[in-house]
Length: 70
Image (cartoon, rainbow, N blue to C red):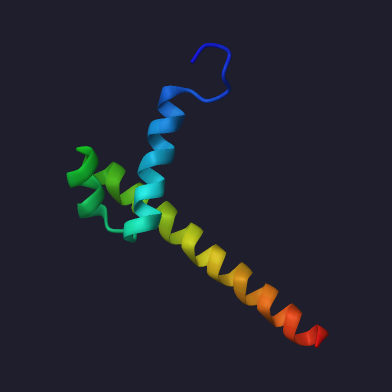
C-alpha cells in the first residue's frame, strides 16, 4: 500500500461506514460485525444517518428540478 493515498485506517473506516449505509444506521449491528465500542458504533451510525438524509434531500431536489423543467 506504499505510495497510495488510502491508508489501512481509512479503508477500515470506509468499510464500516459502507456497512452502516447498506444495513441501515444500526449501532448494535455495527458493534457486532466489527467489534466496535458502543460509542464508536453510535458515532458511525449517526454519520451514516446524516449521509442517508443528505442523499435523500439531494435526490428530492434533483427530481423537483427535473419536474420544473418539464
